[in-house]
Length: 263
Image (tube, rainbow, N blue to C red; front, top):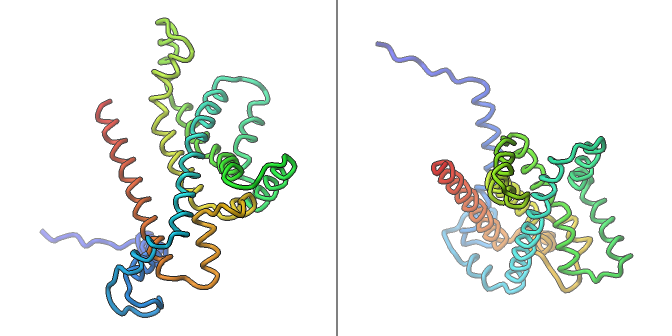
């Protein structure tokens, strides 16, 4: 039997080119983070010195800790607000429900520079000192819609008879939510939280407007340093953050797979 010749489709070539162009810069950043030379134009040898210098850069490490604290805290608060908001929207049947849903995702539709200016003016009118608190409030505002949309989509496909059956068996509203609704929408909460965490760790524009003089986040620190040129320390930092992101995605996929097996 003659083997069938594999036809190379145009769509396959197109997707290959797109993925190559997307991931080539990332590969270059990872490669030159291990370069012995300070100039990212020529490979001179393998070295881990830039990772060592990065961990000894106290200002950069302090900014990283601030960003992690800010991202984790804002995501936790956003997860509670977004989940409860999605559940509340799914239970109301007002004529103005569409308007409420539109308002709930408005922070995603407003340009970041405008949202940052509005928040800065709002905090200034309230007399709040700019710093970690204003950063936390601002990040929570634009993180909530990510989780709310994920949970809302999950609730739309959920069998409502499960909650009704729990209520018929004597469970109250909170018990039915805790035992039935929350476990079913938890994958959506986690996926939305991961996306919100990435957006918080990546934010520069809004953070610049509401940041205080004594507080520095990692994106702002990188943005200010990158004006003078990309150093190998920045490449090392980007590589570490990329590795952490991939690890989080793998852990989430593993947990989701184990959960599906149990079900």
